[in-house]
Length: 157
Image (cartoon, rainbow, N blue to C red; front, top):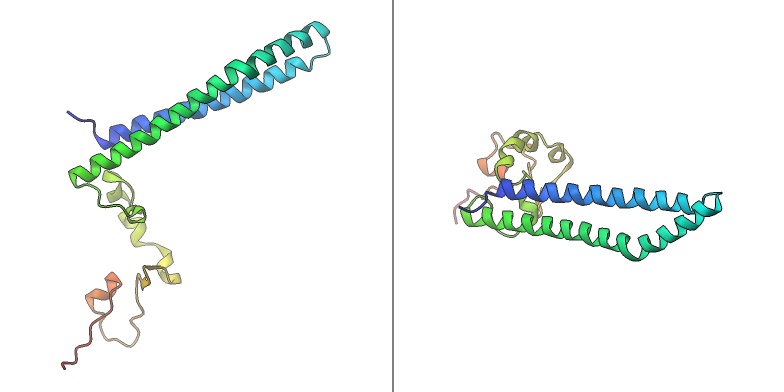
């Protein structure tokens, strides 16, 4: 049984969170070592400089490599989730902007937010077609007006 896209995304989020925590830990340790090497006590300052040298040459780059690896793995998991959604028909083709409702099953929760989108009142458009064309002067708008498609002429040739 293959993993579900939601599970892949949850694991990717956990990896990103771990990478963020590791980066913060790396920063805090670096700041502490810097404070130690700036101590007024000569013995403490010498110890701080020794620790700083080892930190700079060994541990700091290694922690950075681990954080980068976690972020890279998270990105691959996200790509696998998208691929799984596309093969099951839950996500369509390659235009990234088409998923503005959200990913996968979460899209249904955003339909009302998108329906209330205030950008339509300010002339928002998709591909040169307004979301809600001006229907002033028409008695009843044609159903295609809600889709952003021009109403065809009804005159026959």
